[in-house]
Length: 420
Image (cartoon, rainbow, N blue to C red; front, top):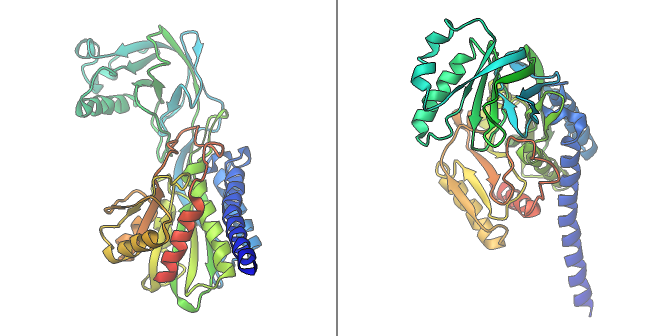
């Protein structure tokens, strides 16, 4: 009877711990994806307010700054933003920002009524003989709509798209898109805007009314957040990283919450911080919450160029992104590069039966592990595989991010760190 009671108590303890992990992560994601943080981008300084939230959370957990350094590591970057109300009226239809269309992140400003000139497969040669022709066009306000949804050849579509981008020097441009659209962070500004309209919402109207104003911000001040948990070997480090920035706002009505990408990764790091504060690690843990990832890995690049620690003392880097659902397991970038470490991860997973699959992938330059790798530091970039497909759109919300297998992914990562 006593054994049964002990067994039930252990099961209850494990279940409550597992639930607490996921429950805490949901609170973090709900907070970071709220309207208060404006999509954690560069409109209304949503990124900096999100960084301050992370600092407060680290302090509540008991994590300290790294030695004599502050939590915040400031740096500057150039960004193009759209903080003002935007409007696109196609004929008599007012389109919905984020759902019907996206403004290209490098767009300039344009206001007023424009005559729509559609360029398509049938009239490409007669109405559009090249970008040089555009400067010779009538001074009448025109907007060129590139409608090539019938072109299946990817190379040809890319060539036509390059014409559309060049046309932004002379006129506002519409690009009609039949595939999923994804927003991004702009680093420059063109003369005029390019509006990518979903093919289901587009029609060849005679006029388009635009209200688009950009705000280019050279040398915008943002910041990384760096925390420290001392281990038994104080001068040898495991770096855990996740980017907290996202795409912010496109106008006042379209916000990109970035729950899966990457509030979920931030939640994973904070949850792991709670574990290592309660269970002293062998190696010291450096927690890096990077901004500027969506702007081209600027935060992690700055940290590697201005490290708080000697890079040669870093034993391993785990960069965590897209933790919203791992029903099908995880993918490990650099798995082919660091075979021994990858095999260790696979062996732990096989023994503990945490996840359905641990998939190997080769090196990439698509996340914050990259500049560590380029400096010769062993690093994995780990992201989940599952049913959460929202990415760089307005639908990547906290409500659409179930965190399936979150606790198992965390347990696998902790076990891997313990085995190093």
